[in-house]
Length: 73
Image (cartoon, rainbow, N blue to C red; front, side, top):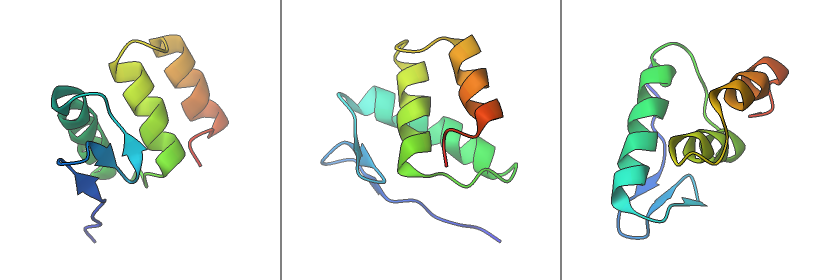
């Protein structure tokens, strides 16, 4: 089954999570979309974590830890 998420390119938000520019929003949306095909169910917290990884605010090790701890839920 295909699920959709709210992406607002005009206001630069995904599921209400704000982005600083369109390039980061699109990179994050692509990452989320790819993971959704593998069963990932995004939440606003999960969007924040992926955004922070895309912009370099958190490291790959931190991203993996968040995933293992299921901090995105």
